Image (cartoon, rainbow, N blue to C red; front, side):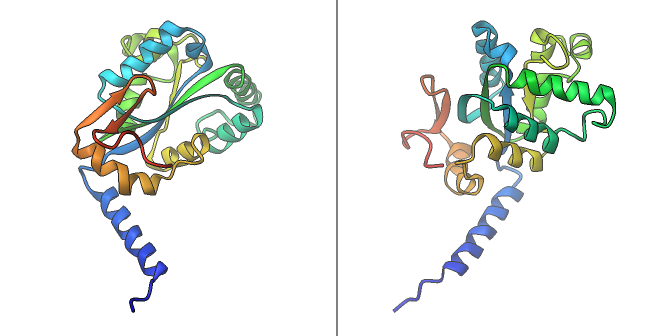
Length: 213
């Protein structure tokens, strides 16, 4: 009788996951947010969505939500604090508070995007954080086209693999990155892939949609 060894299975699964992540062909995940200023305007929201599709991103998951102020504070303290001016200074405190108030002011749309170079590509498509700079050096970028101020700059994107994992977990707590890489990523990478306009996501043809999160 063959004994079931759960520990051995987990170690094997971990090795497979590591192998997939190290593969140069593996799809990379990133978090993308469309901020309240864009969600409030259907034409801008649709234009940003079309930018995602036209740049060949695969939309793995998508949801719209109202962000609680407490969650917004935690997100920016943990993930963005190093980029903001010091919170000990008046300008830094003012900018942080303004950002939190704005991001909790209305609905936002969150995506998990996949591409071979998802993080850098999405940041390029967004354009520079500062809208004035975006309008001059990347006028066709999302921020160059639709950004209003450095706070109301339409979109957010992860800046590294580590922050992408943290940020995806913050917005999609039921999503298992490891399970996705084991079950969905190979099918999406090898194709064929279909897009469901009603759900706004891509899925491997023949599967009927994404697997359980």
